[in-house]
Image 1 (cartoon, rainbow, N blue to C red):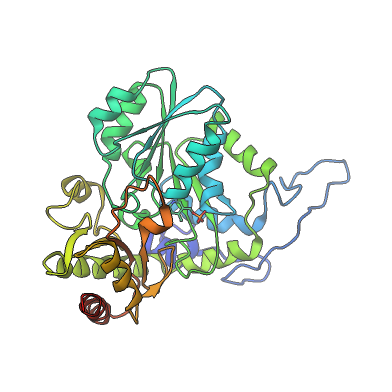
Image 2: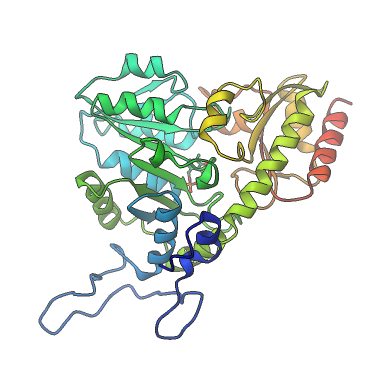
Length: 383
Ligand SMILES: *Cc1c(COP(=O)(O)O)cnc(C)c1O
């Protein structure tokens, strides 16, 4: 690596500054081969055999993400869910894991309905309270503590350093779903986590045009080798074109995420004092749950995700989402376009989302237009 490329903004912008040795191209080719030539003496000195296990199309994107997260290795997966579930699949039946009550809904569903059938003992705790984690953890039996911060869809904050210290003392690994914070604002490995997970579908790619997931590790240990073997054998492998697009998307990561976060802060402040809004959930507001921890743990912003609880309940919330023009009514997050979603109707029974909650993924449009559009939708919805 060129030693002048040390700041994360520069690493992202130049994708580590790699140049193709053969062609002098400054952006990589898209490698699509599924198979690699064996040496005459029957060896595979290139280290590559078959694309389900490994693919040169992953190298640069994995190196960029590993560097941005200050890890020693990264592994791309076909989706965020494929990355997250690989961590749990690397555990053994009978292992005890702690997961948050408030977390990404599909992963919580999989943990409760499939991971448990497979023999993992999954216990949901209030991960925002280190005392609750301390009370639930079983030294020697708890193998993994899963954190998501800020957590979908209430944007509650978990203290990574405090929780990781509790986990380490009990002999458990710590994995952090850092999809919403991104390496722009938080580096969980520096705070004591063992593994960072991203739905790269979201901010890392940033353009709502591919599915991808990634894990980054602090240590290249046996657990990490098991995780990589699961990727190679179960086949939740990213496509070459998606890896190439992801690398392109990450070049603008810092610009996009900072812009979205600055706008989210303005939108949160504006609607926090709005008569048609019951509550705004955003860690950047001074009275938000976890604001003091977030101020320490997130450097330079609180992210582009917030939720508003609309005065008048569920019907008023759905009517508000129906009347936006610039915001797009759609699920997902982290793209350049702003999205709005009535979350409890997506999550269904057992969701921690109140029925009047609208989840907002703030994009990079003009923030005045975003505020004005939401404002007119609230007014129309309240007749
Ligand atoms: C979207 C998302 C996931 C899952 O990622 P996919 O790429 O959709 O599988 C996991 N965690 C969080 C926080 C997410 O937003």
